[in-house]
Length: 168
Image (cartoon, rainbow, N blue to C red; front, top):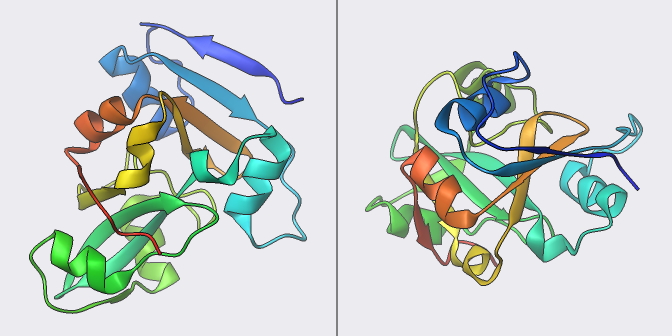
């Protein structure tokens, strides 16, 4: 089992920008590290498997272009982002997945390690409503092989996000 480190109201430790945001805000969270398998490209499923968590509780962070603006969609790793639903959720008309290079530049993270927290630029963020059934959800901690568990309401507060049915 992966090591668990609980952080409560600690000073920023200089970890990833995502962890720094959590620590600065004093949000209770759990860091879960695992050995990233470089041969896998299904990063979310890899995280759920490695951490022994149900795939519905582990969420992936995806960036889409909605009417020209980058928008963050956070959905369970065992589901897909419904682009039409994401566009509707933010009052847009048309959505397409963002190019990987654009997503990396805008967030400051590499694909497979993009966290909804601590991004270089703030983006409109939508969390799939399925997160509401969990006390703790897991999202990328800002690098491949690191996830962070936190309450969905804390995730929404820190990202200024909303919930909507955006997974299919």
